[in-house]
Amino acid sequence: ILIKDKFGQDIFGTTSKNLGFEYNVQKNKSYKIAFEQDLNIGIGMYYISTALTIGENHLDHCLHWLDFSTDFEIAGIQGNMFTGINKLYPKISKMEETNDK
Picture 1 (cartoon, rainbow, N blue to C red):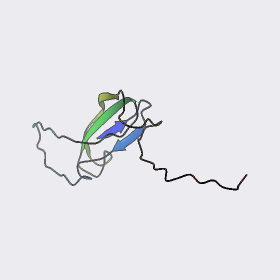
Picture 2 (tube, rainbow, N blue to C red):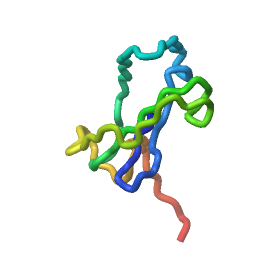
Picture 3 (cartoon, one colour):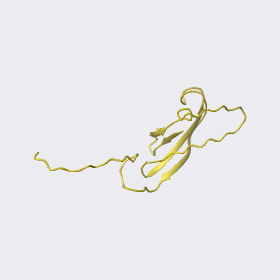
Picture 4 (cartoon, one colour):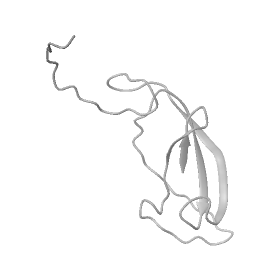
């Protein structure tokens, strides 16, 4: 799977093989696979591309590819607001006065 932002930029991609899940498929059979993922991403539209490959990625023996197979929208976020695509979790420890000018 590959998640793209509204500009078509890749923001995250992985494979079942990368996650340690390998399977065998047979011709003329239908299959379903489910991915679960926490999405700490910003407000906006996103698109998912999917592929069925034999190799490490979509460049190695691609059997099927569907670009922009579905879309979803992040309409709001929980917690602190942020700008950008990915929600990171910075921490501020303290502020000290300095003599620098």
